[in-house]
Length: 389
Image 1 (tube, rainbow, N blue to C red):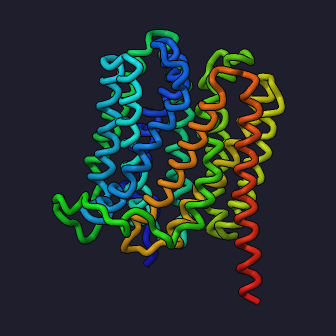
Image 2 (cartoon, helix red, strand yellow):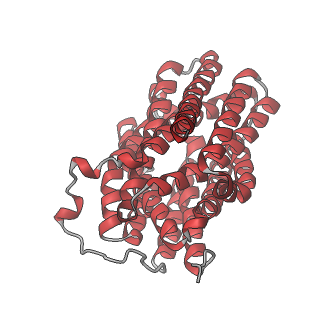
């Protein structure tokens, strides 16, 4: 009898991910101007880079813990970090305090998505991994869509401190849902000092390198967008800086209804290739048209690209992984994702320095990096065909 996909556990997991995603994404559009207001304009590139640095560093630990103490405890740690940080932002209001919190906040995405992806793979039939990860991605992306728009509205109507407290509230609700989930790891171990002792073999799963490498190159663009688009939106006259993020996430949501299932049917690399082409087109539009319509059209197409790429690369990682080390495999893919985002954010922030004329050039650079991912994938598929013959 085939394992069911749409169970109560699956929907609870999706709901928790929606709240978690909204919790940290609702801050993103307001953080660049907030950092400028406390005297840290030159550090805007660090807003995302520091967050992704600790997310990446924590992945080997979250991967090992996911495979030892269980999926649910690791997910709960991730949401708890968001809960704590929301309360600390108004207290640590200096530039150094803010940057420290961005480092701390990064542990949230270092833990929860790793365990979540492993949990989805545990409860979904292998023939429907793409579909399961795609539907889960719908909920996570909904949080990405409503979070920035709501965050900007809260800040405009109340204050930035109110925004931070609302972020904590959503994380708290995410934790409450997780406590009702049934653990899926069959052979759980008690937490001990050995649970967090990492060897070189615990850091990277070479089995999933192809998926991780494509992920790294394709997410360079996301780091660039997170860093530059809030200021670019304001410059071209888009009053709600969260609107760009809402538009691309809505289009990502729409395509995810079919993207994951399509990758189950036609193959991961076919869908990823199409996604990379669409990604390059979207970035070219964003960089070329300095107007609100051009920005929003580019945003919509960018969302289609991410909606195609995310479930397909996640499912490809699961395909390539050893079931006994699924946490490590997902951690490897997410390390690549965080490195891509972090390098994209750091590079764009470093070259930007509040010079608006640099933004289109940096968007085109991101398109070029995505082009390298496309070339790698095309060459890999060509080599596989040659070997098959």
